[in-house]
Picture 1: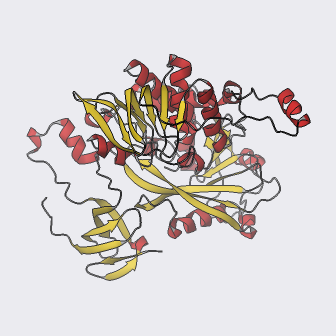
Picture 2: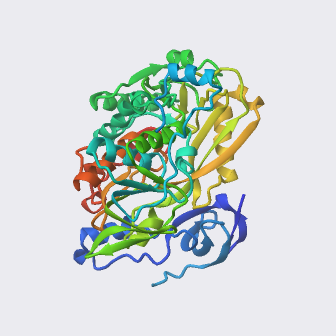
Picture 3: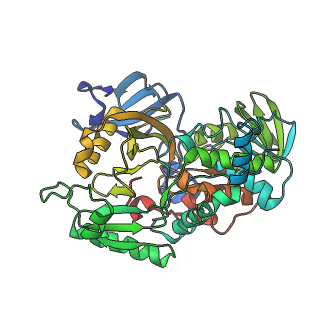
Length: 88
Length: 417
């Protein structure tokens, strides 16, 4: 059992967390100008980094979203921080 | 040149103390160029190389593998082969694979030990029986074999199942596909490797792709740890690492990597002669020829490239097993491992051209790539040789995401994804 650190609650078991997607995948606007290809890219395409990745997670028990930087091969966690609707 | 395997050959070699067997395939060194180059020496890549030579008559085919052949997901799965899917496109694909599997030992002159022992997907309520009937009907309409089982028929097939009245997941019935089964997964890789080698394919191991050669906007080969290899047409079958290669080629895929784990118990005498899956627990199992129970379940919850399973999911899978077969609580777990799988939003594979012309992809198999190996190889070979889709692979093109034509088997088929 790995432990992740919620920025609000501290270290908790991994089963309390849910993966929410890659950080920095900003919704393209305005909708009427967005091509199906761009929309599909926003919805489905992934960088799927092997190694260091910046991801959005939700702590299910407190309901807060936050950003976690971790290594997807070793599962080492570098940093967790509150999510402020970041822009890339 | 390796000999043809037969009972007579075995007898002849037996008289000579088995000293005359030639290696089943040659470990080739890379040539500067090939007509067709396959990246990935798993089942799909090896099958692709074989069908490029056999179906399309290509003489200069190379295959590069970063490690050893069959060392990735081909050697890490739970060896189940089935085509019990919901949508016509999926059944066309997986049943094509199943049909090829049925003749594969003979075709490759290599015993893949395909045992068509059937799969039962067990339902636990009247409502789930409605779902089971719907899927059974869909499978029959799509042209594959399917049968709706009642409780008695399920218990006839697996008498050790939990029959208690107070079971958390009581047995109401299930979906039966009799042509499904299990095969020796290493033998599938080795059989294709041997047959491809016989047709002149170069199998190059310990050769990792580090980049793509692009000329006039078209893929003209790869850079590898063993030098540059040029190719007329290039195909990648590297599920688990698809995104890593696509990033080198300059495009993104709708793929997230997750660990899918599996485990085996200590070997016991024959006690289960079919493949069994519970809708309620998502745990499934079969018994290997060695007597080990081979157990699998759902994906780990955390995106990962680490080829090892995570304890929380292991616990979930095993608690499912004990609900299904209380008697198996006495068994010890012998080994546990994981492979990294390409998870796609609609749980269907990606087969087709990529945004880089001259490069074709076979990937995104999620948790079910092994069962599709012969079809995946056949279709990727078709794409590479003809530069256009086979009718079976057309619906699985990358363009389905922009067209909104997803083939959502995660919602369709009553199986763990």
